Image 1 (cartoon, rainbow, N blue to C red):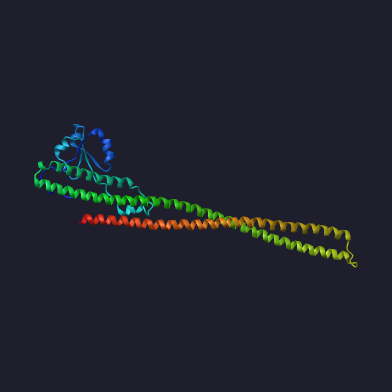
Image 2: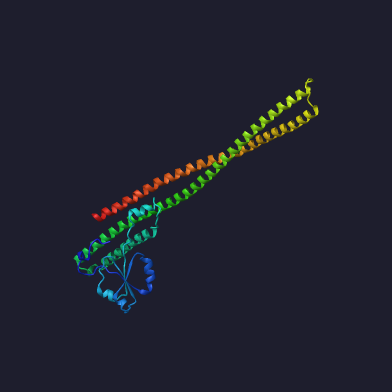
Length: 321
């Protein structure tokens, strides 16, 4: 982030970085995750100094500093992802975790603020050592840098907050969709089970009706045989007729028994089917509730992404101005 080039200040080297021992390189890499670590020629030719130089974003690193250090660490500003990539976190499938990037970006601007405020305090304490023009120009630049860094930090914090909230809602959304999928599958299996029970009930009903019809025909035949035996004019063999009546009676009783058994089976199936119907109704209510929550979350995500888009646009307009 450059507000003014050093030419706006004076020829004096106002902004300077920090020299640190190379033994702290791991800590420096953690502190500056998006920094550029560049070896100097001194390091490349084997004249190790054991020093690392962490440069200020506005500093023009001199040849003398490069000669007296092995590595120059350029504290680069972590760049925000494109708004289209950020949108994936809200609506797309190719989601990326930008939380560390946003945290590093906020820390970057906070470092600028803390460093420049420290410089301003140092300049105030040593006011008599500066020429008035240099002092005023430098303080103006530092104040502008602090204001700009604070604005960028505030923008980044808002984006980070909305990003975190959006991530939480997306995670909730995914959990709801997983539950919804399971409930839809369960409902389909229950509907299939209900259809099976319906088919069994209909089949039992058809067979029961057929068995009742058969029993009715058998009764009619038995009545005719009994009438023939009572008819004095009839020349039937009584023993044969009685044997046939006995056989038909057993067949009639069997069909009536089977029909009644199917009737009782249907009563049990009706109760079971009712239980399945209740489960399906409960699932339908639950599915509607989940779909409602998903729809509300989608509205929330649209709102949050709209706010992030507005912040991006404000940042762009600020740069243009």
